[in-house]
Length: 64
Image (tube, rainbow, N blue to C red; front, top):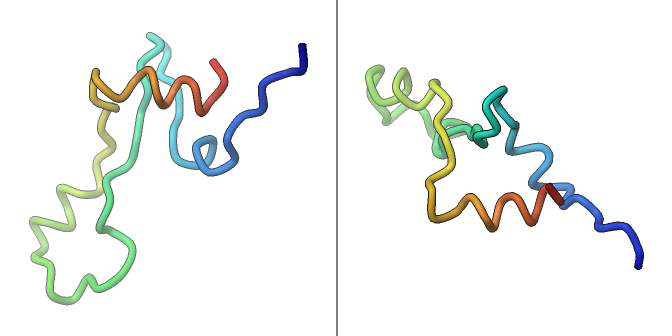
């Protein structure tokens, strides 16, 4: 059976934490920032975790 390839887009967007959870970045922080408030932009800076319902899909993309 051939090796399973990692999805190139997913490997750039997700990272594993030490405990095995999947870390992600927030969307809407790349452009059109002038109309967003400082608070909005500040809160989008922090990374989050992938939701429990999406973990299986992301793990498949990362070939874990």
